[in-house]
Length: 142
Length: 342
Ligand SMILES: [Zn+2]
Image 1 (cartoon, rainbow over the protein chains, first blue to last red):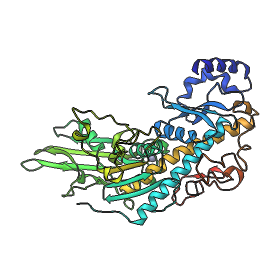
Image 2: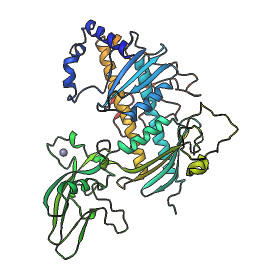
Image 3: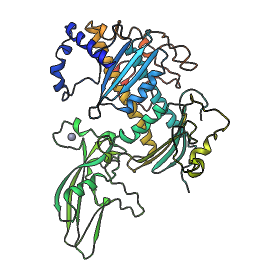
Image 4: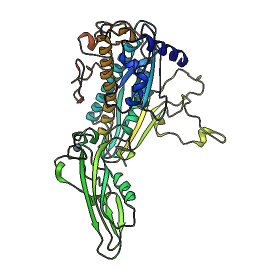
């Protein structure tokens, strides 16, 4: 995957002149590290033309988000592939790859995965609170 | 417990002042593990972060004592009322982002005097809040030992406690240990037991074996089986009560998700505005999500994702118990399901 996408991304950088961010990508890369307003998530170069396959980079996240999100996106029957990696241990970056069967875009699949994960967290929290409120447990042992 | 068979189930077994034992069921290993990681590393607490040493004639070096002070558990129930120091507009530290504790101990008698965490005095700025008081959970209510001093030795320090998370430094962890276990009979073969002659005889059985069916030796190995019950045993350090630690851990996980949703919506909207939609594939995001989707079917289990989404006007209901996303009573984060972040 990587070699293929690398080539495509270079092509794209040359063609895509209406996106100033991409033109300056190389120059900006160094400063980006210190910039407070740097994007939490971005779409990495090399997404397919129709948007059904794309890679994302999420900064300052790790396996805590990555693994749960990946497993949630994989549950979607429209998604053919989803995987994540942390390319380098000393960079706080999470890469997420999504490929769908073609009926939805990767962005939609990601958005749905995020929404579902958030809902699931809410429900686990509620179930825990209910369980606490039910008082149906031991409070002292031995 | 509720008997609806969709979505996760939580059963609390046992709660003590500093631990909680519960089972999380009907969910993925991935989610359970994220909850565990979140509890251990993402829940904010208060800990001493800067120590100004005025006098230290003890036998311990300044940095040695500073390290010990950092590890002392401080009451963190109301830590949410503090800002992170890095987000505060003050240049150094202030009462909005820190709690100041002072310690002055001097030995004037023969023999050895012990300095304890209870000797730390909290400056009264936050006296109406449960924040900053050293945790004194031992029988004598003295707290952790800081150092021992002999006649004429003195320790005088000013400590600045700040809000932080244990991903940065373990002193901010709300928990001493999180027990996390699943599949006590090892039916899934995720564990490979070392043995001399017979693993069954040489290894002790898990306490949780009583809650699950033992394996049937005549049955074939089920390679499609997935773990379903996750046994948590969370022991806190006393800074936040154990039930609250779990809830805050789950909330931190959801806040992470909300943060990514917010940013994703932003870049999608910007791409759509710039007519740069080919970057993300065809139509700008939002149109495709309107109204009914193709998820109404099977694989998601029965009732599925109820027709409308938040993008189609109605609240976002899921099969996980039908709560509107972000509309729960406990959700005090700023994420609003219809408008994004406030
Ligand atoms: Zn401040």
